[in-house]
Image 1: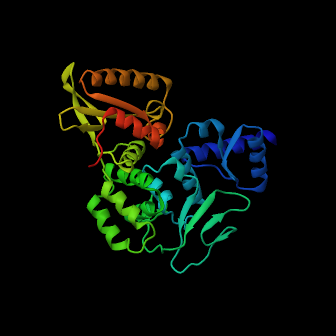
Image 2 (image 1 turned 135 degrees about the vertical axis):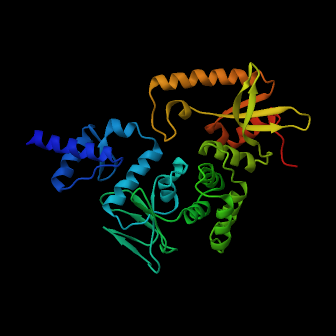
Image 3 (image 1 turned 90 degrees about the vertical axis):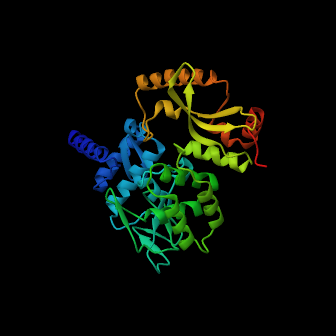
Length: 340
């Protein structure tokens, strides 16, 4: 009987992993079997009642883990509509890790309370026995729905407006930058939607500031957040993703994250450094050690060529950029100009 149950569990996990989601138990007996394996460490449970192999979970980035959870919930509750940061994830946008801890659902017009499978509150919904934390947006209706990979989500303009009003300036900028970068929406189209639907929205000033500073040339969320901090500190906004000729081979161009040209013609190059770009792919999943080693070698070669240009090259990590006191001293020491 134990061998049969083990085979059933393997099939359950294989099916879920093949669909890029988590497994759920079809019966109480199966759930007890899965929970026993969670306790002995052979299976992981990213949220109560949701299961996958521990090695499989370890290979997923935080964003992929959140997307797996959304896919699973969408299958269990096909009429639910995701909004805000959850919808942004479904659209493939760069939602910062700190915003991934809760699922966001849009409630229907006139609903003062949202009741779903034992959940019951009008604002923040916590399942009592199983499942992830869920937040219901009880302020707006779901009159228009998009279906992305079988998941119901709010339209992209509304999703972005929700995100800009609910996130900080720096996190909102990361999300909107990614929407512009991947050409999911035109900036003018988003500006029109914000103008028409943003009146009296809470934190609409933050949303408008995000929209003003948004730039699709930013290639990832970390670059956007670092630029937002530069803006918060009062530094001149750099040019993004500028190509510079390689002194050793002028036909080859090296693209840099940030670039400032000073009045005297001197150039300052800013480079955001971090381990993720060496060990993970664009979707955030781990790459092989060989790929990591090759990326590290390529980056050292690239850095040596940038140094040969004679420009001031200042490198910093995401953690260093988020330390505003340190980041301010670093940019001042490098000679980055401030807004007059």
